[in-house]
Image (cartoon, rainbow over all chains, first blue to last red; front, side, top):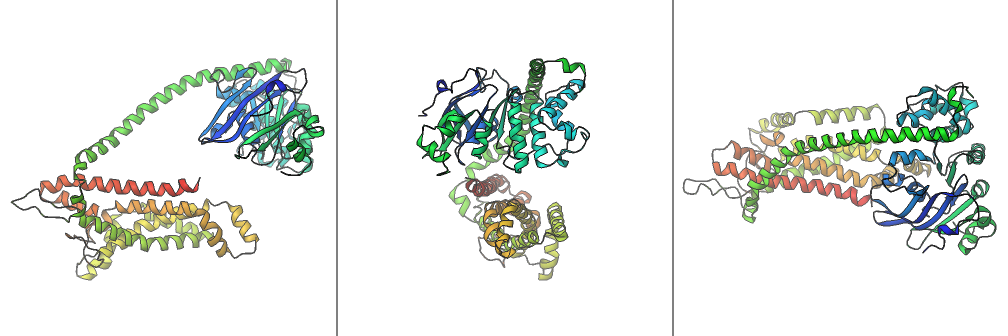
Length: 270
Length: 304
């Protein structure tokens, strides 16, 4: 069905850290996205673009099994992390989600926790008692999220006192503190102003040295600016999302193969 | 950066440590989770024993009463010659339909008006109305029976009428449905109301054209649940509607409903009437269950 398979990975030397193979996600037996295959390369930014309803977010959520929160959700095909099927019992769900983190559309720091506690929460949830390690991890995560300098003197303040952009970077730090291998970002700048958006975009470029990033975005300029590889999805006639084209971001934006990609990039629909 | 010893760890080592902790926590949790789940299963089984024994008794002893004759014939007093000739429950079914149906007719407009009015006002009165309704729900329902008896039956030379039962049941239906309707209205996203108001329409129009249609399935569910509750009520109507041996649609004569018929049979002196209570209990159970199912259908259909 799809024209792309995982062997058709953009020419590159790095290994895929996640491979999505013929994945169909169904909600109550109705497919939301179907027959998608592509590979997520290590320490690169992979973007998913496409209009609303093309299944980008569904696909992203299925990559750390968050879509299972919806009753009636099922998945066929396979998603592998480092060669292990994430839907097999080989990876416990909680371990999987600490290896594949998620940043959401709206900043969602835990409102009753301080800045420090928010970032420490992931480690504490998995039972870390070593205070030195936790403190170090919190600082490191905040530094990585480019937030350390502005919050280091008010770590005990409530997370809600931060601005929207700072809150989103706090959420990124929170996800980073458990040392994920992959960070999923679901339209992370959709509710932020242009300056905060730029900061997050710059952050992805430094973060990709330590963590693989998959980002869903409505903003095509953002996809072209931040991502190395790009997947273009579109809603098919049966209202299920399909992968139209997957390639390097450069090729998708400058030399796309599929006429539908050309139309979308040129802004003719969507 | 701090200069603790932890900093000496490489990125891979730190990642390893987090994974190790996560994996060991999962192992511990899995054990705890199994213990928890098994104790939960046992507790569930214990909780189901009374439920199943009630169902088993009611269905086992009542199912052979489910005949056309039992459902349609009116009550018949056993005589010396035929001790088992107790007729049917046609009078009580009619009475239930009339008394509860009229109560619903009275109660629904009151509950809807209360909910809509106080949802729109959103001042301290909303809190007072809500508190009042919750107090009503918490009151022993026999108090409403006493109130209606003193107000109507006692002033009517002790004559009981079906409509008094409807009045009394209003005290059951109105508070429950008002609370349910308020909750239904509150479930409507606030942005929809703001969008409506931003078009320059009057709040009442937004309520009528936007909020109520969105909340309708939940409102219907709330009303049906309140109605289902009233069908099983005995105490408020017991001494205000009297007894009617014949089916009648009149509101100004005495009436029998399923719960009051059951009460009369159980306190009566005929063994055959007492065993017939299983049949009445089964009919009552099926009726209430059906009403509950119908109420769920509204929300289930709307969420598709």
